[in-house]
Image (cartoon, rainbow, N blue to C red; front, side):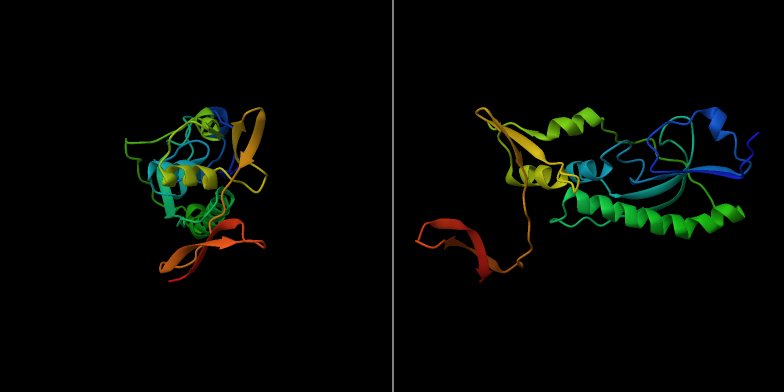
Length: 203
């Protein structure tokens, strides 16, 4: 018979029912890479930007209903306008590790407090995010909305948005580079004088 003192769920994608949650003699906690109650579920970092909700990580008590346990601790994650999805994911990982290291001693000592989650929550399904990855060539976008979709869905594992042009399905991504607030746009040329691409120079 297992009688662990603690049960800790770290980036665990499966639901645990009551028979597991009742095993520990002290506490069952979950490290969720989202700033609960916002962005429950997957692709929390994508929807934090698209919905304009806080990005961050949370440690909570484990309950049979996913991501509903009381808070134990939380930390915000700063997302820069040029960050791509893989960069934002790593930022959440780093903050999650730091938060767990800071919170775990209090959990072990039984000195931690917990707070109920507010009733207002946001959640998105995986298929919602999957639909974002397919760019409709005839859809109209605000520039910022298209840029955000392209950068947020870009991942180190090769993930990116796709678009179908005639019979060709293409991957499409964006590269964002900070050039300073006072830079002015200029049109460069390649050898031979043909138009190159939009470059930036100091104003």
